[in-house]
Image 1: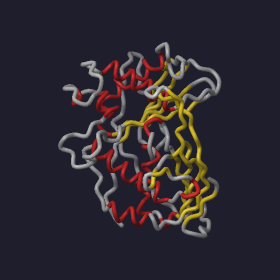
Image 2: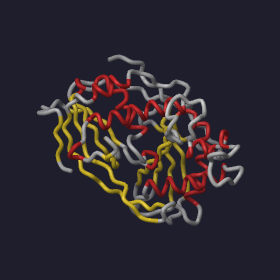
Image 3: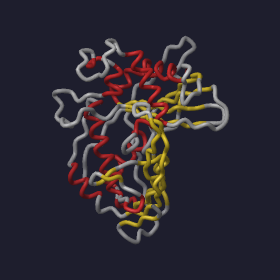
Length: 322
């Protein structure tokens, strides 16, 4: 099954914050909420209570990044009120620094200076992130997404000098097995219900990723990804996999609903034979950078891919643990 590789230009940025001690982890929902409030304060020109119907929404950074309305002439998602948002936040912490990874898709990279300013304000204001004030110390960029070569892009004069966004290069698929490790909870649905570890199939992940790559490329780039989606989805259902997954609840506080809640998903590993996933490989590789499932913008659905020696897959689907 051949198709043109998806072209999804990405900018991957790493914002280093100081001001906290110990291995404190800030929930992705806290980052996303503080980021959204700060960006709205900086970008909104009208003070309208919502973006829908606002006469400035077509050129507002907040509306594009956080509200992402469906354009009137769009041929896709016409029954929805929002398109997928063009950013992903993921925190990586050390003993004395919080590194916030910000991935921007396609045209959203043009707003990088304003988005960095919003994140700086969000971290430094009295409320900070989960009540902790942080100070931005450095901004780096992955020159080529997928290669861990980072370059400093914030100068002494405060002017950013980013590299152009690039589509990640898709490496060759080697023989053996491929293991996907879900580092943060993955939330995907089948027939309207979240899929748990005891019933998780390769196609549950791939179907979600295929839609996500297609929608992000359609709404945020000049090169929409087109292929035979039905054929790929049907083929993915035949892939055997070995899973070791469990359901993991991640607590978060909803300011909008003013209550604490759990945002759960599956974590663990999924292993497939490389020979079985050749048609799906480019999408699986891209998914590492854009995450999968719901709440991807706040860091959920993050996974890594690794090549392993071959192992016998005894059945179409083996699931261990719940």
